[in-house]
Length: 170
Image (tube, rainbow, N blue to C red; front, side, top):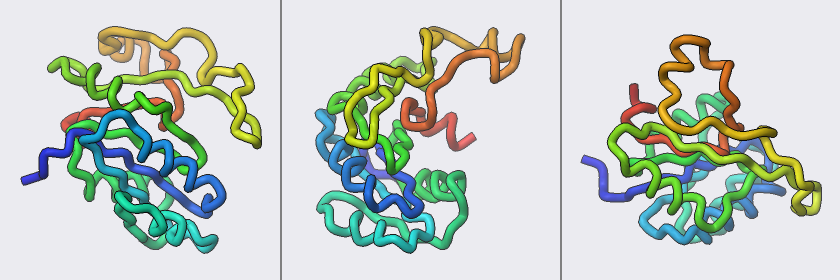
C-alpha cells in the first residue's frame, strides 16, 4: 500500500545539471508540504545526479537513458502521490502550483488540471509570452476530445499539468 503522500513532483532530467537546481528548489519551496520530490536522472553524463543528491528531501532515481517517456514512467512507478506533477528539469513551479493543483483535483470527476507557463529568457526573467498562447479550455473536455480529437484543444507542455494517479495508471 502506498503511503499517504498527497502529491508527487517528478522531475525528469537528461544532461540538464545547469537547470536542475532551480527546478528542485522550486519544488522544495512549494506551499503544499504533503508532497514528495523525485528526480529521475535519465543517464546523464553532466553531473545531474550529483546536483540532485546535494538536496535533502529529494529522492533520486538513476537509470540508463530511456528517453523522456521512460524517465516519466520510472518516476510514476516509484512515486506515492495521489496527484502527480511532471516537471521538466529546465522548468520551475510557482510556490502555490502543487497546492492549487491538489485543490482542483479534489472533485471526483477531475483527472487533470492545467495552467499556462510563462516564457523566460536565459536569465530566468519572464518574457511576457505565455505557453500556450490564448485561453486554455476549462470544464469537461471529454465531448470535445471524442468528437474532434485530442489535438483540437490547447494544452500546456508537460510542466503545466497535474494528473490524478488513476488516470495515469490506466
